[in-house]
Structure formats: structure tokens, C-alpha cells
Image 1: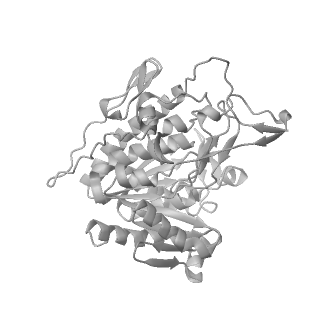
Image 2: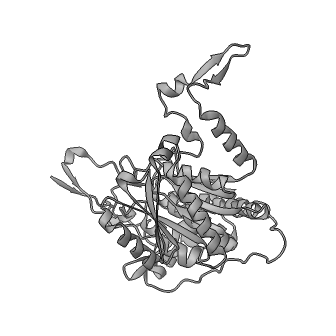
Image 3: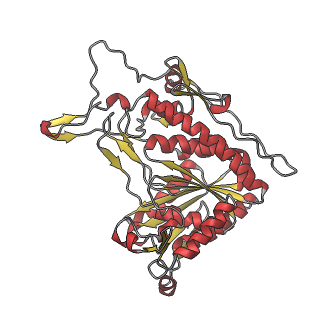
Length: 414
């Protein structure tokens, strides 16, 4: 038999997940007030304000006024996660009203969305303070997104739709950007590849065999230099980045967390204008099931074949470029399996979203060649056989080229 994925409610029961007043207003197409990003002072170093944190009250968080876009939730207020606007058809839809969130395996709903909101609000202030310190020390700032997002199929989620991505490209690119003098905010999928930690073997015998016990007292553990030849330079590079504060790490798992954190970090970085690079390497889900259409409990296999209808996820590139960080240098990635459509698809994205660069690549050759596409040019980058043998990585060439493009962008030459 076929099973349609629909949410079941008792007759006459109120829908606690119905859109808030601001969501209904947004869905009706009423323009929302936009808050212009603060401009950097023309002279003098940036001063880092003290970090502010949400004040806890019971199980919820009372967010500061800057948390933005409030929506009533019971007796409290929900901000950012409740109102990540994106065009859907002819109207506008707040993301928290549309996209389910799964936090720590707990029940999805407004309480979970409030937790996502509180985490995003705290991250926004943390990134704001960190970025000010980076700019004050003479660094440019880059946000690197990395890894894939997860979409639950049930409210009490047991099954998920995954966008698989190891996160390798984002992690290697983050390393290269730090080496190039950027401060990097690394927004990554939990347990995906992390900068410099990628030299370690995956969990298993190879990892355990790379370490040995040292005699005591007390006994200790040491790495085997023969088993981990790249560990020492990786640790040294990581330590230098960490000590300089040049790497800030933020984690997401599901789609809602990613979208809320992307918006939060974009708002935090917007005041720093053209000195900010957005390097959007994450593999973001294209489809999701609205919370109102999701079954609460585990889908039972005993009921037969499963049919699922999923909605399109609104593209976040448009509000990022137009509203959240309109002065930033924005890079997206386009992966295809058909080389005949790759350039056309990349140019269509540039025309639609009005950002600066698309890094275009074919699935089979993505580790050794890409094409950098702008509105005026297409530049192929590739590794020679000699470079491959030497361990050169394509991300080194990508970052080197994009650093030059970023400089031209800041000088208003492109």
C-alpha cells in the first residue's frame, strides 16, 4: 500500500504550528521593514564591544533587542528563526514557519525553533565581536560554509533526508584562507571534515594504531610520527590559527539550524562591507517537508510502500545578496554531472542572484579542475599530473585566484 506523509491531529485540536501574525503578514506579501547595516567608521581601529549573551529564564531565553524579527510564541517571543524571509511563489514565507527543526533528537515544534533561534542570536553576537577583532588586526573576513544539511521526515525524527557532503572542500579552503591572511568563520556540519583535523584517519583501527602508550608514571599517549607524517605541520598550523583567533567554528546539523546560522552570521558580518567574503561550499538540501505536513511519530514500514511529497527549499542566496550582506563578496558553487550545461547553469545563477562568482565543477573531476565563472569571464583552474603527485590541492588554486578577485572587488574594479 502507499502511505502519504501527513500530520495527524485530533478533531478540533488547535494547530500550535500555525504561522504567527508576522508570518501571515509576510505570506500576504506585505513589505517588512529592513534594518540597514551599520557602516564602519572611516578612521581608527575597530573597538570590540563586550560579548552579550541571552539571559536565561527557566527553560527559555530572553533575547536582547537586536535579536530581530519577533513573532509571538505562546507567552514569549521568537525572533530570527521565525522569520528568515525567502520568496516562495508570489509571496514571502518565514523559514521557521515553513521548515522543521530537529534539535538533539527532541520533539520538533515551536520550542525547538526557539532553541534554534536562541543559538543563532548568541552566534550572531559572537561573530560580530570576533569579526571586529579580525578587521582591527588587519585581516579580511571570510565565512566558509561546509558539509551537508539534514531534513527530518517525521516530527519525532527517526528518518532523515541527507545531502551528503564530506565537507572536504570547505575544510581545505578554510585552511588556505587562513594561510592567505583571512579570519575564517567556519560554519560546518557536525562531524564533517574539519580544517587540519583531516590528516587524521577516520575512526577505526587505523586511528587507534596511529597512537601508542608511553610508560609512566603516569602513563601517557603519543602519536606515531611514521603513521601520521602530516600531523605535526597540521597541528602547528591549527595552533597558530587558534592562538591568533583566526578561526571561529560554528556547527549545524539540520536545515533549520543552517539557515538560521547563515542569516545570523550574515547580519553580523554585514557592517564590514566589501572586506567580507562568503564562500558558500555547503551542500544545502533542495527539498523539505513542512512541519504541518509531517507525521508526528515514526513512519511504520508495516503499512507498505512510502510515498513522500516534498516542497522546494527557498534559495537563500537572494536574501543574502539583496538584504543580509549586500556589500559583501559572494561566491557560490555549482556541481553538475553534465559538462554541456555547467557554464550556462553558472551564468544563470549569476544573473538570477546578482552575486560575484560561481565556482563550477563536474562531479568526476571536482578534485582536480574547476571553472571560475563571473559575469564577464570564465577561468579554468586545474592541477597538472606533477602537482597531483606533489600533493597540491585544487582548493589552493581556487583560494589564490579568488583572493585576487576579492581585492579587485574591494577596489571596485569588478
